[in-house]
Image (cartoon, rainbow, N blue to C red; front, side, top):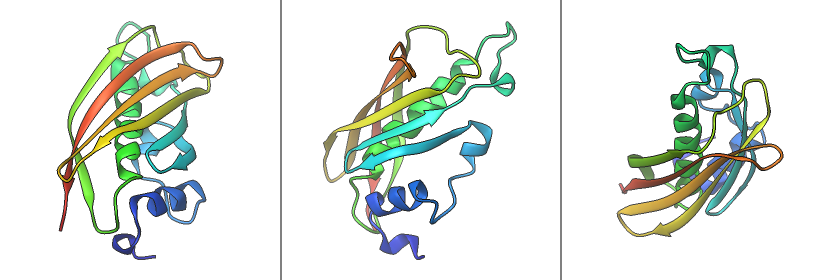
Length: 144
């Protein structure tokens, strides 16, 4: 499958359907897409004993990575074939500690897409809806 010939949405759907491998970051931070549509994504993620800070809690970088993923994928899902992106700003608010060994739900939503920037927002929550962290992101749109 030629990735450059696929739209961002087609690439995200191919990952969701297992037609192309997930990015390697999903081995370090266990996460996978559950739902993808243009401008919107939903992932599940799991923090485990490999994601702890020196105090034994889940490191803030776990939430940051998951939120970077869903905010960027929300932008990616709206891009035409051959166009890519790079996160240039990620603003995160930690609301409560991230629990270990629980299914977490992360959602990303595209807020605005221009020729040069994509702006999105994301949330990380427990499966029962308790908000853990929020983010906004700006992505640079890279056109050939």
